[in-house]
Length: 186
Image 1 (cartoon, one colour):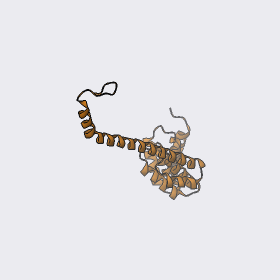
Image 2 (spheres, rainbow, N blue to C red; image 1 turned 90 degrees about the vertical axis):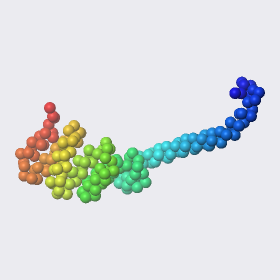
Image 3 (tube, one colour; image 1 turned 180 degrees about the vertical axis):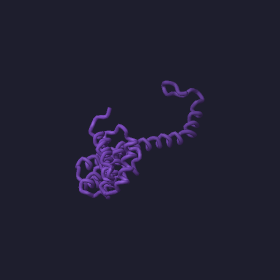
Image 4 (cartoon, rainbow, N blue to C red; image 1 turned 135 degrees about the vertical axis):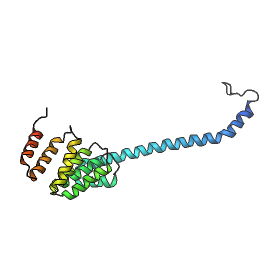
């Protein structure tokens, strides 16, 4: 190989030139491709971070029109599920149970493993209850209670179940469920 001073030993010049001629172009292409990939990845990450910041600002506004804008402009951001749930909660608050139920169903379809899934499930069941679909609500609440044995929303689910069984005329069962919902479990 080359000496420390940059000089070539006798007879190495042609071999080195031939090596550069044969391998030089693929090396330059490989380095160029790596550079393009690195720069592209960096730009993509920067773009995603900007989207996340802008989406979070829309969510922080707390205004329904801003949250809808978030869902329209940034549906793949980490804040989109919170916006969907906030919009649904707002719809429940204004008595728009059909719209809220559809939004909760959308959350459940789009986010099968999201941390907010249990909240969406129980809230969807509460929409069924509010729309007078007591049997459907009771089935959903019982299924939820069977899966979520230690969830912070468990008292909400127990009270929902109590209301449903009360509507079916099962008053003693309703009272027992209310007691379980407000008393600490042993």
